Length: 393
Image (cartoon, rainbow, N blue to C red):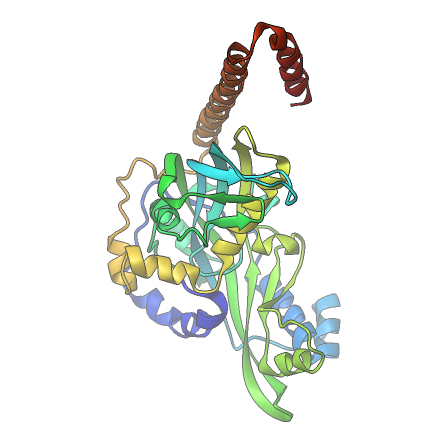
C-alpha cells in the first residue's frame, strides 16, 4: 500500500526484522509467480542500471556487466532483498448512468446507461503497474512453505492489507467534477453499481536493492543512498531506479518535467497502465470514449498516495489493523487458475452480449415509437431514415 519511492528505504532496512518475525501465512487462494532470475543475475542487472542512471563507477560496472568474471571494481549493492509483492488482479463489471457526446462541437450531452468491463491490477507498493503481457499469461503456482526461500535467501513476504472491493464506494463518493472523464464523457457517481467482481491474489517476485553513490546535490558532491528495483518473475524484467536530488536539479535547469523513476527494460511504457477496458457499451458510446475511460482510470490508480488514502479510509492506518480486515472467506476472492479465469471471462463475455442486445432492443423500440407517432404520409420517410441510421451503426 505504500509508495515505492518513498518507502523502499524503510522496507529494506526492516527486512531482517520481518524475516525473524513470526512466519506469515497466506490463504490457500493465493497464487505465486515463481522467481525466474538468480540473485547474482539480479544484482548484475540492478548494478548496471543504477550505474547507468547515476554515473557511479560506470565504466567498471559496464565491463563487469559484459564480462561477469572480469576482476574489476564495479558498483555493488549494500543491501539486496528478494520480496514477494502482494497484488490483486481484478476482473470487474460496472454499470452507471453516463452523459456523452460524440464530438466537442455537439451541442448537448446525451444521457444513457452504460456497462463497462475492466481487467485491472492493484499493487500495494506502488504508483506503477507490475503486470505485463508476459506475466498475465504466465503460470502461477499455489503458495507453499518451500517458496519462502529462493537461491539461498529468505524471501520477504509482505501481507495483504486491502482488497479492491471498496473501489465502487470510492467511485460513488466522487463529486460530479471528479466524475468528468473527459470533455466528451462524464458519469453520475451515485449510479455506479458493480454487477460482477472477481479478485485474484497473486504474489509477484522482485528484488529490492540499495546503493551508496556520490551525487552532485545542489552543486556539492555528497554521499547518497539510491534504491533500485527489479522484476523477477520473468528473465528480462524491468529495472527501476529512483531519481536522485542531483538529477532533479539537472532537469530543473532545462525546465524539463522530473520523472518519478528511471525505468529500463521491455514493456516500460506499461508501468502506468493499470487497466485494460475489455468493453464499454451504451447507445451513445464510441471507441474514443472507451480509450478515455481507460486513461482516466489509469491516472486515478497511479495518482500519488491514492492507494495509501484508500487503505487508510477503508482498512485502517496501521498494517496490522488493515491485514486483519482482509476477509479471505469473501467468495469474490478467487484463485488465479486457468479454469477459474476462463469461467469468469466467459461470464463477462455473455453479460456484455446480453447488455448489447438490450441496447439494440431499446434503439429498435424507440424508433418504432417514433414511427407510430407520425402521420401515415410521413411514416414511409421516417422508416427510411430509421433504416438508414441503423445501417450506419
